[in-house]
Image (cartoon, rainbow, N blue to C red; front, side):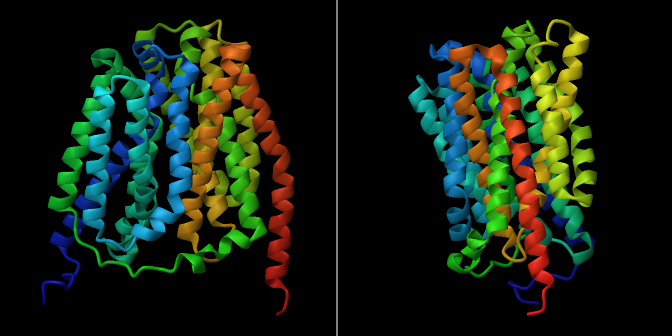
Length: 404
Protein backbone atom coordinates (compact mmCIF):
# COMPACT_ATOMS: atom_id res chain seq x y z
CA UNK A 1 0.00 0.00 0.00
CA UNK A 2 1.46 3.37 -1.01
CA UNK A 3 1.42 6.47 1.16
CA UNK A 4 -1.38 8.06 -0.84
CA UNK A 5 -3.75 5.08 -0.73
CA UNK A 6 -6.54 4.98 1.81
CA UNK A 7 -6.31 1.92 4.10
CA UNK A 8 -9.21 -0.51 4.07
CA UNK A 9 -12.02 0.25 6.46
CA UNK A 10 -11.31 -1.40 9.78
CA UNK A 11 -11.59 -0.63 13.49
CA UNK A 12 -8.74 1.89 13.51
CA UNK A 13 -10.05 3.64 10.40
CA UNK A 14 -13.55 3.79 11.83
CA UNK A 15 -12.21 5.28 15.04
CA UNK A 16 -10.28 7.94 13.14
CA UNK A 17 -13.32 8.71 10.99
CA UNK A 18 -15.48 9.03 14.11
CA UNK A 19 -12.91 11.34 15.66
CA UNK A 20 -12.72 13.36 12.44
CA UNK A 21 -16.50 13.73 12.34
CA UNK A 22 -16.51 14.83 15.99
CA UNK A 23 -13.82 17.43 15.18
CA UNK A 24 -15.91 18.76 12.29
CA UNK A 25 -19.06 18.90 14.43
CA UNK A 26 -17.22 20.77 17.18
CA UNK A 27 -15.70 23.11 14.62
CA UNK A 28 -19.18 23.73 13.20
CA UNK A 29 -20.41 24.56 16.69
CA UNK A 30 -17.64 27.14 17.20
CA UNK A 31 -17.99 28.67 13.75
CA UNK A 32 -21.76 29.10 13.90
CA UNK A 33 -21.61 30.26 17.53
CA UNK A 34 -19.21 32.98 16.38
CA UNK A 35 -21.83 34.11 13.86
CA UNK A 36 -24.79 34.23 16.23
CA UNK A 37 -23.09 35.07 19.54
CA UNK A 38 -23.69 38.75 18.84
CA UNK A 39 -27.43 38.31 19.44
CA UNK A 40 -26.82 37.70 23.15
CA UNK A 41 -24.00 40.24 23.46
CA UNK A 42 -25.70 43.24 21.84
CA UNK A 43 -27.01 45.03 24.96
CA UNK A 44 -23.75 44.91 26.92
CA UNK A 45 -21.60 45.54 23.86
CA UNK A 46 -23.63 48.59 22.88
CA UNK A 47 -23.32 50.02 26.39
CA UNK A 48 -19.55 49.45 26.59
CA UNK A 49 -18.79 50.88 23.13
CA UNK A 50 -21.24 53.76 23.65
CA UNK A 51 -23.34 53.06 20.56
CA UNK A 52 -27.07 52.50 20.12
CA UNK A 53 -28.50 49.00 20.10
CA UNK A 54 -29.57 49.60 16.49
CA UNK A 55 -26.01 50.50 15.46
CA UNK A 56 -24.61 47.45 17.24
CA UNK A 57 -27.19 45.30 15.48
CA UNK A 58 -25.72 46.26 12.12
CA UNK A 59 -22.67 44.14 12.95
CA UNK A 60 -25.00 41.19 12.41
CA UNK A 61 -26.10 42.73 9.10
CA UNK A 62 -22.45 43.12 8.04
CA UNK A 63 -21.65 39.48 8.87
CA UNK A 64 -24.75 38.15 7.15
CA UNK A 65 -24.39 40.18 3.95
CA UNK A 66 -20.72 39.17 3.67
CA UNK A 67 -21.69 35.49 3.94
CA UNK A 68 -24.46 36.06 1.39
CA UNK A 69 -22.15 37.58 -1.23
CA UNK A 70 -19.05 35.49 -0.59
CA UNK A 71 -20.67 32.07 -0.19
CA UNK A 72 -21.16 30.57 -3.67
CA UNK A 73 -18.06 31.96 -5.44
CA UNK A 74 -15.63 31.33 -2.57
CA UNK A 75 -16.94 27.82 -1.97
CA UNK A 76 -16.63 27.00 -5.67
CA UNK A 77 -13.10 28.45 -5.77
CA UNK A 78 -11.74 26.73 -2.63
CA UNK A 79 -13.59 23.40 -2.40
CA UNK A 80 -10.86 21.59 -4.36
CA UNK A 81 -8.16 22.39 -1.76
CA UNK A 82 -6.83 19.89 0.77
CA UNK A 83 -9.64 19.76 3.33
CA UNK A 84 -7.52 19.41 6.47
CA UNK A 85 -5.48 22.48 5.57
CA UNK A 86 -8.59 24.37 4.45
CA UNK A 87 -10.50 23.72 7.69
CA UNK A 88 -7.43 24.48 9.82
CA UNK A 89 -6.96 27.79 7.99
CA UNK A 90 -10.63 28.67 8.49
CA UNK A 91 -10.45 27.93 12.22
CA UNK A 92 -7.18 29.88 12.56
CA UNK A 93 -8.87 32.85 10.88
CA UNK A 94 -11.79 32.57 13.31
CA UNK A 95 -9.36 32.45 16.24
CA UNK A 96 -7.57 35.60 15.07
CA UNK A 97 -10.83 37.43 14.34
CA UNK A 98 -12.33 36.57 17.73
CA UNK A 99 -9.13 37.76 19.43
CA UNK A 100 -9.37 41.03 17.49
CA UNK A 101 -13.01 41.38 18.58
CA UNK A 102 -11.97 40.85 22.19
CA UNK A 103 -9.56 43.82 22.10
CA UNK A 104 -11.59 46.06 19.76
CA UNK A 105 -11.52 49.65 21.08
CA UNK A 106 -14.50 50.76 18.99
CA UNK A 107 -17.26 49.48 16.74
CA UNK A 108 -15.19 50.00 13.58
CA UNK A 109 -12.44 47.60 14.64
CA UNK A 110 -15.14 45.20 15.79
CA UNK A 111 -16.69 45.45 12.31
CA UNK A 112 -13.38 44.32 10.76
CA UNK A 113 -13.26 41.44 13.26
CA UNK A 114 -16.72 40.38 12.07
CA UNK A 115 -16.08 40.83 8.35
CA UNK A 116 -13.06 38.52 8.09
CA UNK A 117 -14.62 35.30 9.45
CA UNK A 118 -17.79 35.98 7.48
CA UNK A 119 -15.75 35.34 4.32
CA UNK A 120 -14.77 31.88 5.52
CA UNK A 121 -17.99 30.66 7.15
CA UNK A 122 -19.86 29.71 3.94
CA UNK A 123 -16.82 27.78 2.70
CA UNK A 124 -17.00 25.63 5.83
CA UNK A 125 -20.78 25.22 5.52
CA UNK A 126 -20.41 24.20 1.88
CA UNK A 127 -17.69 21.56 2.39
CA UNK A 128 -17.90 20.12 5.93
CA UNK A 129 -20.81 17.73 5.40
CA UNK A 130 -19.36 16.45 2.12
CA UNK A 131 -16.02 15.85 3.85
CA UNK A 132 -17.67 13.94 6.69
CA UNK A 133 -19.43 11.67 4.20
CA UNK A 134 -16.20 10.93 2.36
CA UNK A 135 -14.36 9.89 5.54
CA UNK A 136 -16.63 6.88 6.15
CA UNK A 137 -18.08 3.93 4.30
CA UNK A 138 -21.26 4.35 2.26
CA UNK A 139 -23.53 2.84 4.92
CA UNK A 140 -22.36 5.40 7.51
CA UNK A 141 -22.43 8.56 5.38
CA UNK A 142 -25.87 9.72 6.48
CA UNK A 143 -24.93 9.35 10.14
CA UNK A 144 -21.68 11.27 9.63
CA UNK A 145 -23.42 14.18 7.91
CA UNK A 146 -26.09 14.28 10.62
CA UNK A 147 -23.38 14.48 13.28
CA UNK A 148 -21.79 17.52 11.60
CA UNK A 149 -25.16 19.26 11.39
CA UNK A 150 -25.75 18.44 15.03
CA UNK A 151 -22.85 20.80 15.77
CA UNK A 152 -24.53 23.50 13.69
CA UNK A 153 -27.89 22.89 15.38
CA UNK A 154 -26.26 22.98 18.81
CA UNK A 155 -24.74 26.37 18.00
CA UNK A 156 -28.07 27.74 16.78
CA UNK A 157 -29.87 26.43 19.84
CA UNK A 158 -27.31 26.73 22.64
CA UNK A 159 -24.34 28.78 21.42
CA UNK A 160 -26.10 32.12 21.85
CA UNK A 161 -27.41 31.56 25.40
CA UNK A 162 -24.15 29.98 26.54
CA UNK A 163 -22.29 32.97 25.15
CA UNK A 164 -24.69 35.31 26.90
CA UNK A 165 -24.16 33.56 30.22
CA UNK A 166 -20.41 33.64 29.69
CA UNK A 167 -20.58 37.34 28.87
CA UNK A 168 -22.43 37.99 32.13
CA UNK A 169 -19.72 36.11 34.01
CA UNK A 170 -16.57 37.31 32.21
CA UNK A 171 -17.80 40.15 29.98
CA UNK A 172 -18.43 40.19 26.23
CA UNK A 173 -14.71 40.54 25.57
CA UNK A 174 -14.08 37.44 27.66
CA UNK A 175 -16.65 35.54 25.61
CA UNK A 176 -14.72 36.38 22.43
CA UNK A 177 -11.44 35.31 24.10
CA UNK A 178 -12.96 31.92 24.92
CA UNK A 179 -14.06 31.49 21.31
CA UNK A 180 -10.62 32.53 20.07
CA UNK A 181 -8.87 29.96 22.25
CA UNK A 182 -11.32 27.19 21.36
CA UNK A 183 -11.00 27.93 17.63
CA UNK A 184 -7.20 27.79 17.83
CA UNK A 185 -7.36 24.43 19.62
CA UNK A 186 -9.70 23.03 16.96
CA UNK A 187 -7.37 24.21 14.18
CA UNK A 188 -4.64 22.13 15.81
CA UNK A 189 -7.02 19.18 16.25
CA UNK A 190 -7.94 19.24 12.55
CA UNK A 191 -4.28 19.04 11.49
CA UNK A 192 -3.40 16.42 14.08
CA UNK A 193 -6.31 13.98 14.02
CA UNK A 194 -8.72 14.49 11.14
CA UNK A 195 -8.30 11.77 8.49
CA UNK A 196 -7.14 12.84 5.05
CA UNK A 197 -9.63 12.73 2.19
CA UNK A 198 -8.90 12.74 -1.51
CA UNK A 199 -8.86 16.18 -3.07
CA UNK A 200 -11.78 16.96 -5.35
CA UNK A 201 -11.26 18.21 -8.90
CA UNK A 202 -12.09 21.85 -9.45
CA UNK A 203 -15.56 22.10 -11.02
CA UNK A 204 -16.42 24.81 -13.51
CA UNK A 205 -18.67 27.21 -11.62
CA UNK A 206 -20.38 28.35 -14.81
CA UNK A 207 -21.67 24.83 -15.43
CA UNK A 208 -23.14 24.56 -11.93
CA UNK A 209 -24.57 28.07 -12.15
CA UNK A 210 -27.20 26.95 -14.66
CA UNK A 211 -29.53 26.52 -11.68
CA UNK A 212 -29.69 30.32 -11.44
CA UNK A 213 -31.69 30.33 -14.67
CA UNK A 214 -34.38 28.02 -13.26
CA UNK A 215 -37.48 29.96 -12.06
CA UNK A 216 -38.52 27.40 -9.44
CA UNK A 217 -35.07 27.51 -7.84
CA UNK A 218 -34.98 31.31 -7.81
CA UNK A 219 -38.49 31.45 -6.34
CA UNK A 220 -37.51 29.11 -3.51
CA UNK A 221 -34.36 31.12 -2.80
CA UNK A 222 -36.39 34.34 -2.68
CA UNK A 223 -38.85 32.69 -0.29
CA UNK A 224 -35.95 31.75 2.00
CA UNK A 225 -34.83 35.38 2.04
CA UNK A 226 -38.31 36.43 3.20
CA UNK A 227 -38.52 33.67 5.79
CA UNK A 228 -35.19 34.58 7.40
CA UNK A 229 -35.97 38.29 7.26
CA UNK A 230 -39.13 37.61 9.25
CA UNK A 231 -37.21 35.46 11.73
CA UNK A 232 -34.40 37.94 12.40
CA UNK A 233 -36.27 41.25 12.61
CA UNK A 234 -37.12 40.24 16.16
CA UNK A 235 -34.66 37.43 16.94
CA UNK A 236 -31.64 39.72 16.43
CA UNK A 237 -32.87 41.87 19.31
CA UNK A 238 -34.41 39.13 21.48
CA UNK A 239 -32.00 39.78 24.37
CA UNK A 240 -32.97 43.46 24.33
CA UNK A 241 -36.68 42.57 24.05
CA UNK A 242 -36.39 40.34 27.11
CA UNK A 243 -34.71 43.11 29.09
CA UNK A 244 -36.78 46.12 28.06
CA UNK A 245 -40.19 44.68 27.16
CA UNK A 246 -40.43 41.67 29.48
CA UNK A 247 -38.37 43.16 32.31
CA UNK A 248 -36.01 40.18 32.56
CA UNK A 249 -32.90 40.93 34.63
CA UNK A 250 -29.71 41.20 32.59
CA UNK A 251 -28.13 38.34 34.54
CA UNK A 252 -31.08 36.08 33.69
CA UNK A 253 -31.33 36.80 29.95
CA UNK A 254 -28.92 33.97 29.08
CA UNK A 255 -31.11 31.44 30.87
CA UNK A 256 -34.19 32.63 28.97
CA UNK A 257 -32.30 32.36 25.69
CA UNK A 258 -31.20 28.86 26.67
CA UNK A 259 -34.82 27.92 27.25
CA UNK A 260 -35.69 29.39 23.85
CA UNK A 261 -32.98 27.21 22.30
CA UNK A 262 -33.95 24.11 24.24
CA UNK A 263 -37.59 24.24 23.13
CA UNK A 264 -36.21 24.60 19.61
CA UNK A 265 -35.05 20.97 19.80
CA UNK A 266 -38.72 20.04 19.53
CA UNK A 267 -39.01 22.32 16.51
CA UNK A 268 -36.04 20.62 14.88
CA UNK A 269 -37.72 17.23 15.30
CA UNK A 270 -41.14 18.48 14.12
CA UNK A 271 -39.64 20.28 11.13
CA UNK A 272 -37.71 17.16 10.14
CA UNK A 273 -40.93 15.13 10.12
CA UNK A 274 -43.04 17.77 8.36
CA UNK A 275 -40.54 18.40 5.57
CA UNK A 276 -40.68 14.72 4.51
CA UNK A 277 -44.31 15.14 3.47
CA UNK A 278 -44.07 18.49 1.68
CA UNK A 279 -41.36 21.14 2.13
CA UNK A 280 -43.58 23.93 0.81
CA UNK A 281 -46.52 23.01 3.07
CA UNK A 282 -44.15 22.69 6.04
CA UNK A 283 -42.84 26.19 5.25
CA UNK A 284 -46.36 27.63 5.33
CA UNK A 285 -47.27 25.82 8.57
CA UNK A 286 -44.25 26.95 10.54
CA UNK A 287 -44.38 30.49 9.13
CA UNK A 288 -47.89 30.73 10.58
CA UNK A 289 -46.70 29.47 13.98
CA UNK A 290 -43.70 31.83 13.83
CA UNK A 291 -45.90 34.85 13.14
CA UNK A 292 -48.28 34.05 15.99
CA UNK A 293 -45.44 33.49 18.45
CA UNK A 294 -43.62 36.72 17.57
CA UNK A 295 -46.78 38.83 17.55
CA UNK A 296 -47.81 37.40 20.94
CA UNK A 297 -44.51 38.31 22.66
CA UNK A 298 -45.31 41.88 23.71
CA UNK A 299 -48.96 41.38 24.76
CA UNK A 300 -48.01 38.28 26.80
CA UNK A 301 -44.79 39.67 28.27
CA UNK A 302 -46.34 40.82 31.54
CA UNK A 303 -46.44 37.36 33.13
CA UNK A 304 -43.72 34.68 33.01
CA UNK A 305 -46.13 31.83 32.18
CA UNK A 306 -47.73 33.56 29.20
CA UNK A 307 -44.35 34.89 28.06
CA UNK A 308 -42.99 31.35 28.06
CA UNK A 309 -45.96 30.23 25.96
CA UNK A 310 -45.22 32.86 23.31
CA UNK A 311 -41.49 32.09 23.35
CA UNK A 312 -42.15 28.34 23.08
CA UNK A 313 -44.27 28.77 19.95
CA UNK A 314 -41.74 31.21 18.51
CA UNK A 315 -38.76 28.97 19.31
CA UNK A 316 -40.32 25.81 17.87
CA UNK A 317 -41.19 27.51 14.58
CA UNK A 318 -37.90 29.41 14.40
CA UNK A 319 -35.77 26.26 14.65
CA UNK A 320 -37.99 24.14 12.41
CA UNK A 321 -37.61 26.56 9.51
CA UNK A 322 -33.82 26.09 9.25
CA UNK A 323 -33.84 22.51 7.90
CA UNK A 324 -37.16 23.03 6.12
CA UNK A 325 -35.75 25.87 4.01
CA UNK A 326 -32.54 23.95 3.27
CA UNK A 327 -34.42 20.86 2.07
CA UNK A 328 -36.96 22.93 0.12
CA UNK A 329 -34.29 24.78 -1.86
CA UNK A 330 -32.16 21.69 -2.53
CA UNK A 331 -35.23 19.75 -3.69
CA UNK A 332 -36.02 22.52 -6.17
CA UNK A 333 -33.15 21.42 -8.45
CA UNK A 334 -32.26 18.13 -10.11
CA UNK A 335 -28.52 18.87 -10.29
CA UNK A 336 -25.84 20.92 -8.49
CA UNK A 337 -27.50 20.38 -5.12
CA UNK A 338 -24.34 21.35 -3.24
CA UNK A 339 -24.40 24.76 -4.90
CA UNK A 340 -28.14 24.98 -4.24
CA UNK A 341 -27.53 24.29 -0.54
CA UNK A 342 -24.77 26.90 -0.35
CA UNK A 343 -27.02 29.37 -2.14
CA UNK A 344 -29.71 28.79 0.47
CA UNK A 345 -27.13 29.62 3.15
CA UNK A 346 -26.50 32.87 1.26
CA UNK A 347 -30.24 33.49 1.04
CA UNK A 348 -30.61 32.84 4.76
CA UNK A 349 -27.86 35.31 5.53
CA UNK A 350 -29.44 37.87 3.23
CA UNK A 351 -32.59 37.51 5.32
CA UNK A 352 -30.61 37.66 8.56
CA UNK A 353 -28.94 40.88 7.43
CA UNK A 354 -32.18 42.43 6.22
CA UNK A 355 -33.93 41.41 9.41
CA UNK A 356 -31.25 42.99 11.60
CA UNK A 357 -31.33 46.12 9.44
CA UNK A 358 -35.12 46.46 9.50
CA UNK A 359 -35.28 45.72 13.21
CA UNK A 360 -32.66 48.40 13.80
CA UNK A 361 -34.85 50.90 11.94
CA UNK A 362 -38.01 49.87 13.81
CA UNK A 363 -36.60 50.32 17.32
CA UNK A 364 -35.94 54.10 17.21
CA UNK A 365 -39.13 54.73 15.23
CA UNK A 366 -41.66 52.57 17.10
CA UNK A 367 -39.86 51.04 20.09
CA UNK A 368 -38.48 47.61 20.83
CA UNK A 369 -41.92 46.31 21.86
CA UNK A 370 -43.15 46.66 18.25
CA UNK A 371 -40.55 44.30 16.77
CA UNK A 372 -42.73 41.20 17.12
CA UNK A 373 -45.59 42.81 15.23
CA UNK A 374 -43.40 43.96 12.34
CA UNK A 375 -41.71 40.57 12.14
CA UNK A 376 -45.10 38.83 12.10
CA UNK A 377 -46.14 41.10 9.20
CA UNK A 378 -43.15 39.95 7.15
CA UNK A 379 -43.95 36.33 8.04
CA UNK A 380 -47.46 36.91 6.69
CA UNK A 381 -45.97 38.34 3.49
CA UNK A 382 -43.85 35.21 3.11
CA UNK A 383 -46.95 33.04 3.61
CA UNK A 384 -48.72 34.92 0.83
CA UNK A 385 -45.85 34.00 -1.51
CA UNK A 386 -46.09 30.26 -0.75
CA UNK A 387 -48.99 29.51 -3.17
CA UNK A 388 -47.07 31.10 -6.06
CA UNK A 389 -43.99 29.00 -5.31
CA UNK A 390 -46.17 25.89 -5.04
CA UNK A 391 -47.69 26.59 -8.47
CA UNK A 392 -44.23 26.96 -10.01
CA UNK A 393 -43.23 23.66 -8.39
CA UNK A 394 -46.30 21.89 -9.77
CA UNK A 395 -45.65 23.31 -13.24
CA UNK A 396 -42.00 22.19 -13.15
CA UNK A 397 -43.00 18.67 -12.06
CA UNK A 398 -45.64 18.52 -14.81
CA UNK A 399 -43.12 19.51 -17.48
CA UNK A 400 -40.60 16.99 -16.12
CA UNK A 401 -42.98 14.06 -16.76
CA UNK A 402 -43.99 15.16 -20.26
CA UNK A 403 -42.61 12.97 -23.06
CA UNK A 404 -39.58 14.55 -24.59
